[in-house]
Image (cartoon, rainbow, N blue to C red; front, side, top):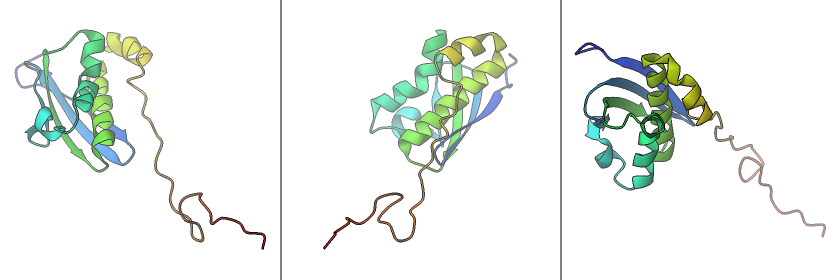
Length: 132
């Protein structure tokens, strides 16, 4: 990989969209201009989620990741970033695709929030039925 080249992929989850750039470096992850530790300060679980594609392939601290993420909450954003990182690693090296697929890191979780329907309290919850 040349000095300024990078690999780009898009990751989505719920209503979150992450645009991920991967380039060789020392393992720094930048999310919306902040370090990942600052951006996801409330949860070390989410930081581990971001590192998962690298730990599966034993590539920790080999690549720098730059992410622009929008929409959704922190958990959806973290999973969108994880999918984007996995996709960029496949673009970088096609041989790792089967390993990431077995670890279930290349499939998009397409579940979205169901909308509220009129006449109901939520998407499916109804008022309690009374016979009398």
